[in-house]
Length: 379
Image (cartoon, rainbow, N blue to C red; front, side, top):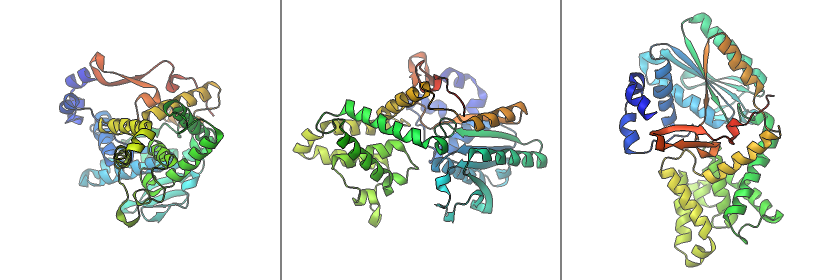
């Protein structure tokens, strides 16, 4: 990609700072909940594919991070003033558990929801069969503006691959198994010995972590949930600690806050340095990954998760979303929509390997035994 960027005017226009940054530092892949992500999507995707056309984007996903991506993109487009109408965005979110929750100070209801600028921005569905609403909205827009272009940004995990509304009973145990595998390999007894007692304690720690105020602010980031769960399991921090509960305005604001605090606890106590040496090593490794720009803070866990999911895929217990596949096909046959799969962690955690030695430092490709190369059935 380095060679391609250097010789391609469209990319040079869109990634104004890319050429300088790619030789100076490692470009960080932002998470979907971060505003930086929508800036990269606009300048790196929309402006390249549609440099002069009006375009409407549909974000199709299953959770809070996809909704935040839609909302942030809408806010970015609004800042463009008179050019705002050139870009439009809508979000289709299929997550029954989000119905009744609050977002932007409003209660989420089934169907179309009004958001910033008093515009319809989100469609909340309880079933993937409701994707017909996306087709209806495209038809309506196309009738009003025949020259407008369309793009799908489709979340991969939990949306196209093993949609969470249908596969919760498969994904959750798979993540537990991945965590147990990692802990069994990384930690020694008596910290974690793989016994039923230790597994149950880890499950309870995970539930506490995922429900904490600190973890909730990251839109269900399983890396953060798992890292905090291990800390709770160790007993070095309690779920009621103000750093995690967020009371009195002293809550931690980013994963490195948590990692650095836990490292300080271990390193400043001789007994803890001996007892929790492997935990300190893990947290130091994760902090380094974040500083180096990795989109995944807990890559070792994600690698184990990918191994478990691939096994489930081979056993035909993990499937692709047939309804989304049909939507992509139907829109492609009408030559109306460009569909792009979107992941904010394109690294080894998805079975993807980088090849910097080929002077293609930002090109990745999946290895032959990765999940993304495993044939999966559709359902």
